[in-house]
Image (tube, helix red, strand yellow):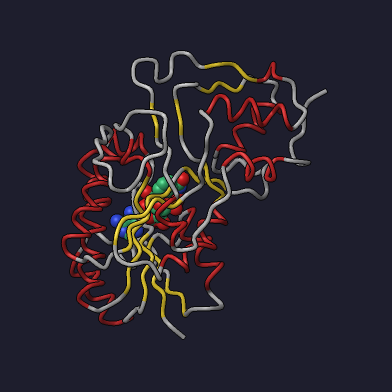
Length: 286
Ligand SMILES: NC(=O)c1ccc[n+]([C@@H]2O[C@H](COP(=O)([O-])OP(=O)(O)OC[C@H]3O[C@@H](n4cnc5c(N)ncnc54)[C@H](OP(=O)(O)O)[C@@H]3O)[C@@H](O)[C@H]2O)c1
């Protein structure tokens, strides 16, 4: 059995990868205190002892607002941590997948989905750090498989609000008779985490490089929500356009799937997957 190291194994994505792949691999998920990715010597010592064949690097500071407030601390985790993982993986000949983000596109304009060859202009700390990590990982380990993930959600247990995501926000607002406020100037893919988990193994077959890795979506966030609640038979009084958000600069994080599709990796579009996730589950107050 091959040994698979998953960093960030206690996190949203890492914990689901661990559960999904533990029968197929000898999965190794050290906690933050067992393996601090910011310490190169600890990372090297870990590889010497554990000798993983494959690595999925999920550890990071994944919250955009936290990164904005703590630029130095988050850069150490997101950039130096990823650099350490890619460097040591190359030394010990382990195949590595690095989790990047659609936020690298936050400064790119237009309404169409971005492709991986575009020059990117991230303006928030998180997007800048993810882009720096991509460049550093490619420099030290050109075999790195770098996946630009989009906003993910857990489709099950929608009444568990421990960690909010798009469908939970939708259910929560409607249950509490509150308005959903989204902008027509915001475009992004929203992806079922289970699809990311299922496609992750195929990603190990990709040649080193950068790949958009999430659901396509043709709607802006306001229209997506409006169409969803309308199809679910819910009154449109629950939705209101947020005219203040992105008023000066519209945002387009949409990602083209053309490159991964060529390798047989496919994601459902955000609307269809969210409709299936919410259908029969959402409770409307009477
Ligand atoms: N979730 C999304 O929608 C989304 C979207 C795009 C990209 N991504 C990217 O996907 C990856 C996984 O995201 P996620 O949502 O699963 O993140 P998460 O739930 O916040 O989990 C992050 C994990 O990283 C660990 N960690 C933080 N600093 C560490 C360090 N110095 N050394 C070792 N471990 C450390 C955390 O452990 P402790 O909690 O113990 O510190 C936690 O297990 C991240 O790279 C994120 O940027 C996520």
